[in-house]
Length: 126
Picture 1 (cartoon, one colour):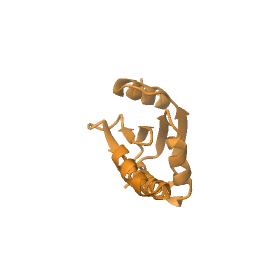
Picture 2 (cartoon, one colour):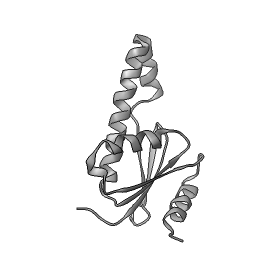
Picture 3 (cartoon, one colour):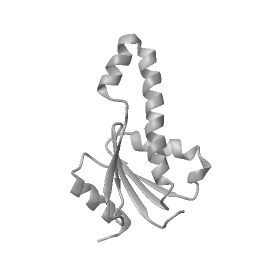
């Protein structure tokens, strides 16, 4: 069941704020399971293990976000880190996303209201 809705995603490597301006719920977050504690615990074993763990958990994080993206036709990825580009590269390897328009924009840390305003402006919703 595909809809014609737009989705804004402000993200870094730890949190993705999903901003659907047409939804009653409006916004919610997806949080990466790769926390500081996980990193510390993996590092005590080996640096190689820590990198493998981070890669696995990032992939699970991107998979969770991509499952939501499938419900939309136009998506804006924005945020302060390269996580948005990594997610875009992840999506480009999957044909399920070929008909979804995905825009990427750099953005600093923002409050929830600033994120909403950024998404409204991008999609021309005033």
